[in-house]
Image 1 (tube, rainbow, N blue to C red):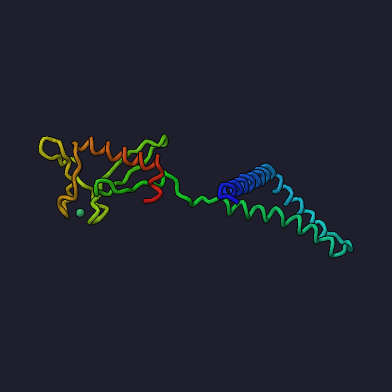
Image 2: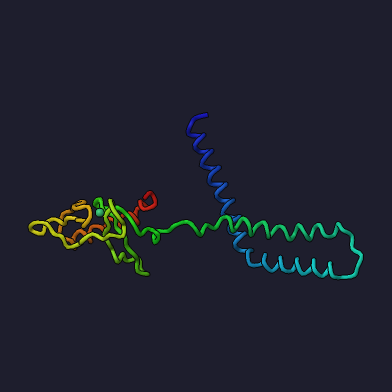
Length: 180
Ligand SMILES: [Zn+2]
């Protein structure tokens, strides 16, 4: 068997299993709302049996328990699939650019705002003066009151701010932020 056939088999297996998973997922989502009602019905049926003064064989409870257990099992699987704790790009609010720590916020439309620089060496509570512009305004020095010059970047402070915003934007677009 050639390696090409091996790859083909793998591709077919992947496609088929993806298809099955997609169908299962679709079915689970479609029938999800009815399961809750079903579960309630099963429970009320169980309660009515338990509260009724009738002699009912024990084995009759078995299918009830099984039918009640299926949706419960599916609820558990569904809850496991959901991962609300997984961070999104909106959680990326701090990063290092030009050897400086930057913090920022987002508007609802995703626009990056409130970009503030912090010294990476001392307290992160200390902001760095954004207006220290080098000779001929061609360079911005990042100066911490405690540690002195931390770094620099070409361009005046507004240009540097725009560069930082573009870098953040690029890291979000390329998913690079996930590695940080
Ligand atoms: Zn410092």
